[in-house]
Amino acid sequence: VAARRPLNAKAKPFLPSASDRPDIPKVDESPSATLERMANENARLLREIGWRNLAMMRRGRSALNPDVGKLDHEAAPYLEYLEKIGAQALSSTAPLSPEELQAAVDRGPHPSAVAKAEFLQKESLEMCERRHTMILPFSAVKHISGVRISPPGVVPQRARRDRTICDLTYSGVNASTVNLAPTEAMQFGNALRRILFQIYRADPGWGPVYLAKADISDGFYNISVNANGTKQFGIILPTAPGQEPLVLFFLGLPMGWVSSPPEFCAATESITDVCIKEIHSGWRPPPHRQEEPAETPTPSSRPTSSPGRPPRIRYRRKGPLGTADCYVDDFILLCQGGKRRRKRLRRILFHCIDRVFRPP
Image 1: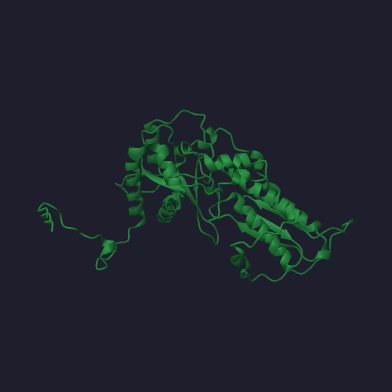
Image 2 (image 1 turned 90 degrees about the horizontal axis):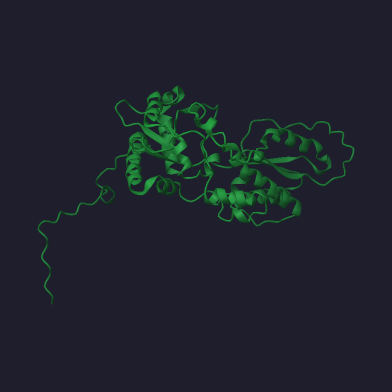
């Protein structure tokens, strides 16, 4: 029998972590402490792997479908570019000096963000966990070429969660942005008029017009920005006196950037076009995972609308209405007919969304 090796007298004793020892209570970090810890970790990675690799690592895989390039739409090549590279964010002005960045940090965030500092910290932490942003200490990015720092703001919304925006106009980011976005994709200006016109022109002989709305969660953040372009979308967070200033960088399209609406609408308007085409083709798609939540009725205290006079349409012999429209990140489905037809058209919309945005 082989002799056992003697124990090392200099070896340190094994101490299990707090997660392995149920008798040690876990300490919950505050959002500010968690953000500071994440910022220090990102600063270490920035020194080791550089900005581009850090941004790509924190961003993760794109929220767009990997097969979006196969979409039967003329915008498919551009959507494939957004999925693989991200939206381009180029500036026509020279990079800011460290002194100019320091002045932007000294100015601080908008008063609305200071008043909602606790909310903004929780919102920033949630966005970091969802891979929409990454946070860094100002000292780690002060001397990086191309970095821009803007003041954040918090917009209150009635009966809804407050919304964080970036004041990219004050910092000059919007004015210096090179216009590369497909502005023709923004067709939401006449969305209400188109929807009302479709309802007005529908044949009442097929019954009432039913409407369904589908919303894209996280909106603009689902479209990634090119790793190098994310340098321009830094916002200074409210910090306590004596604390290291923290800068939050957006990895997806930020609210407040002049190119965010057209870049995002390139995806949603393409979904709408493909959905209308599939409706007219008579496609019968398989069941969708969102059918059960979609069948849940929404509680409402609004009284039922009373039928009015039908419009004076000369040619009324037409099929039941079945179409879709889009307002930025909201899809509106218009349909006449029975429950089975309404469910089929809703399935078509859901499956068309999955063709562009990656299913979970």
